[in-house]
Length: 134
Image (cartoon, rainbow, N blue to C red; front, side, top):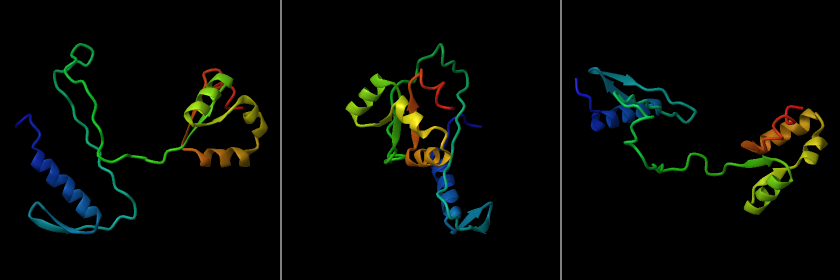
């Protein structure tokens, strides 16, 4: 068996998977299979194992890879921090909340859920992390 991955075979397999999930008919092992239309965006994960490669010792791979499409173009972030971090967030145009703003929520679950739905992720100052669960 060859150690190299055949790109044409991989492309055909991915196209078959996507066609099957779109409800089209594909041929597998000589028989035709009718796909089922999915009501969600289907993703494909690929995992590659490199044999005889120690990432600590060998630095053969370097560089970046730009994805053809942005995974989440409109991602919203909120900075939970002290005065210095809130000032930095304000300078770069990121939404921020200080300690006083968090105290205003004061365990009000409706306000906390509303805040959580508004943003995709939160960044917190190291001294704020202990205060957030309260």
